[in-house]
Image 1 (cartoon, rainbow, N blue to C red):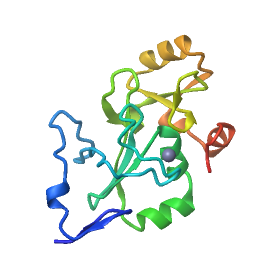
Image 2 (cartoon, protein in one colour):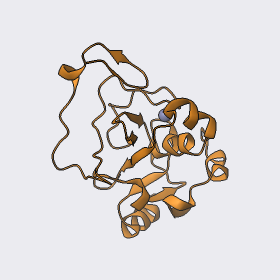
Image 3 (tube, rainbow, N blue to C red):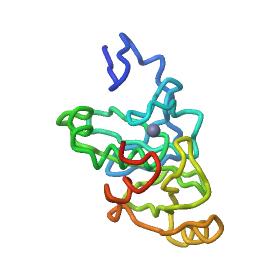
Amino acid sequence: MDRCSRWICLGDAIAFEIAVPPDLPIVFGVRPRVPRIWETCPVCGHVVAPYPEWTAQIVYEDGVALFFDGAKDLFTFLLSPQRSISESGTVPIAGIFVTSYSTRAVIDARDAFFVVGSDVLGPGGEELVAHGSVGEAREFSRDHGGTRVIGFEELSTSLLVAMPGGAR
Ligand SMILES: [Zn+2]
């Protein structure tokens, strides 16, 4: 059986699949995936696996996942119609996940809170630092000089454009 990701096609990739740890959450029936060592961020080209504390991902209904080296590039991708159309085609998104910086848990991005402007930098510089609760996010923001705590629905292209390296 042929399996293709967005970036790599393998003749028979079953042997290369990494088992998903059973404690990862299920969102709308979709579990997040564990990035394989060759997965790269479609926005900046960074290899994702060395940065598990920053990993974000989109899982499509056909099971294909795209991995990002931070929430900033995840949202740059989601908020860019050209990228979304060219990369995902017409397959609907089934789940969007980010990693909580405070707990390292993989969480539903739509329930996450993001600290803007902190002094903690990700692989691509300034980041939207994800947390699973508003309390954790506010505490992190206080400790690390954050300027705002925002939810998923508040992410915008204008905010990304204002971040160094954002909305490329
Ligand atoms: Zn990236």
